[in-house]
Amino acid sequence: MKQLEWFVTGIVILALAVVGVLYLTSGRSPEQAKVAERQSTIATGIRAMLDDLSSLQVITLVPGIQVAANEWDFRGNAAADGRTEPFYGVAQLVCDRIQTRADCWRLVRLDRDGRSVIGRDDVTALPSAAPAADARAAAAPEAGSLRTETVPRRDPEPTIESETAPPAPAEPATIWRVTGATVNGRAGPGTSFPIVARLGQEHRLLRLELDEGWGHYQILEPVADAGQEIWVWADLVSEAQ
Image (cartoon, rainbow, N blue to C red; front, side, top):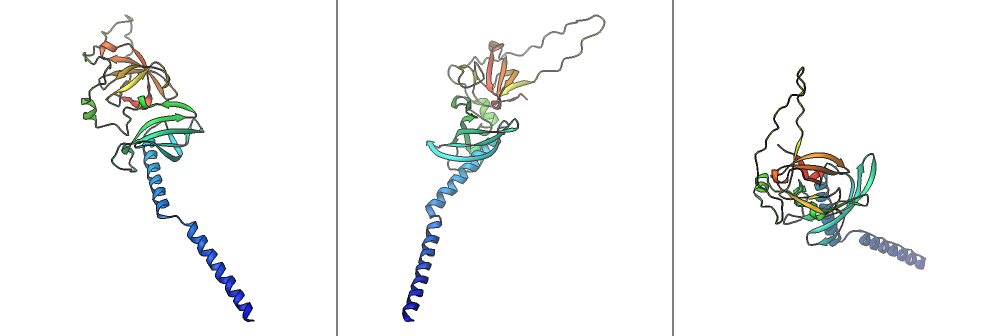
């Protein structure tokens, strides 16, 4: 009888030891918890930045690894044209510490459905990372930029097309401007096309067409650059006030 009691007691002690070990090993260590919290903060900040881009409706987002100083890659899925498409990108931290605020992150690269739509050269200033408007206006253009001499705009003189009835007044065209201090204008709709112009706050543009997030524009001002046609990622352009 004594041996049976010792045997049962030993089984109980062994079972309790196994349960304790499983409990201890199943929980996160303080270091693992810290890493998980850091990844969650990164994901929240990057998602907030992407939510500022009207062309990207994020469904899921997973942060990746640190690929460079203050830069992390990320991937996920977004809604587009009634379907779900994968995306991949790289974001840069512009604040002094990792935060969840959108303005603390700057988009460096974005690939949608395996196609590059934004490269490092095209994100000199996105809305989530752009400086204040007065600071942007005072920023100097990059070397090799287009001429920036401003000439007052002249409206064309009215003409009479019919003696019997005057023509109906045409609706004014929407004029566009870039949102950053300097934005690249490319020869075609994609980062694989060469940069043919550097656009600043003084430029005024007329949109000709849209092609999967890329806008085809004609430069209206300055007069020295008027008539040139360029392509710019549409999120880098807004209506002129």
